Image (tube, rainbow, N blue to C red; front, top):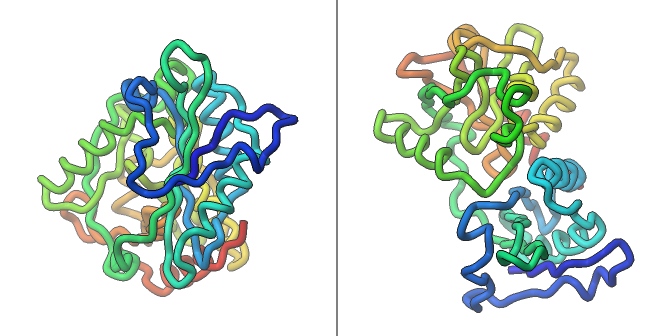
Length: 287
């Protein structure tokens, strides 16, 4: 683990990053990240010891922090820490980093930050075999970000209990994952991934202004698709689009692009050739 100590704009970046051996106690039980989920995080894929899409992840981390009224992350400090953590992973296999900022120990007013580096635990067979999804009501309408900004829609917070409960519900229904729908019937996102559809010559993802977390890997997919001459766009997608699409993927930083094979028990088209090309492009990303 990498412990990141507070630093101001003029702080000694190297002095604020401290590697911690696995198994050494590091988190104070009074930390509001642990007791209230009051914090933000990013999960960054690592290939060959190099963090992928680092600029996009750091930008989203800063955006999430702003939505929670946390101090702006010291970008140079975090970039330095991420590279140290990534270099600690085996170079011959894929890995991931969980980057965390919390509000800190209650009463101190000082944020806590750390990074956990871990090798990938599986072989990501779902990139080939795909995933079965169920649609579940997210519990709020597509205007939630405008109507109720205090619900933090679009921020990547530590409060993931609902997302994990949704994935358990998917397994109870014989599926692998979830696609959340707004209460007024629009496609949002998966608990830990962005939804991307192919509709003819268009590659489409749900609009982020409906309370969807902006996807870092989605940006990479759009750049790849544009290179193939496909049109890319954010759109308001009704639930029926999941069944009408020419292909659908759940895309995330470590698993990358997993094709959706079934939606609520109904088989949907899979574009395996495009999926393989998409994953090759994602694996080749630089910072």
